[in-house]
Amino acid sequence: MFFLQNRDLKSRIFHLEDSYRSSKEGLLVQMEARIVELEERLENEERDRSNFQLSNRRLERKVKELMMQVDDEHLSLTDQKDQLSLRLKAMKRQVEEAEAEIDRLESAKKKLQRDLEEQVDFNDQLQGQLNGIKKELSRHRKPPNKMLGDFEDEDDDDDLSTDGDSLYEGPSGFKFLKDNEVKS
Image 1 (cartoon, one colour):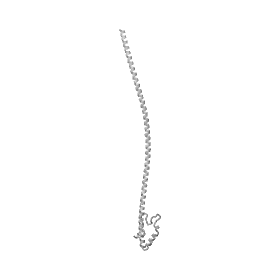
Image 2: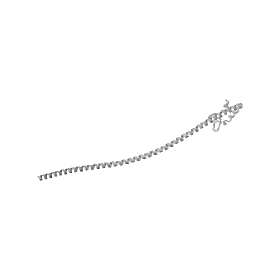
Image 3: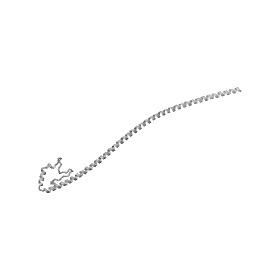
């Protein structure tokens, strides 16, 4: 009985060891498969991480290039703004100078117009005085009227100035009356 029990126990131990060995081997196979799977996942994640880092470096380089471009454009625009501001100031100064010149010319024009009006008035006065003197002379010299007519016929050149205008004409288109015109 002992012997049977011993054999039975040995058989059970052998069976348990066998099942333990097979479960241990199964567990070992499962563990090794799990390790392989985890290693593959780790490799994939490391590859993804490496790709992300590479993409990140490219993006950082691109951002740096864009920032440099923006800075360059900002400097260029600032320079253009400064140049335009200087041009605007120069144009404003030119406009102010032109307006001052226009004002100066307008006052000179007004002064010339006043001088011209005064000269025309003075010429009118002289014309009136000359006409008065001619009338006075014609009243005093009624008989020698023929002599005065002969004098005018002989010296036709004396009525003309060096530029061909009549000496009896005023400078602004007014005409002096000749003695024979005064009579009529």
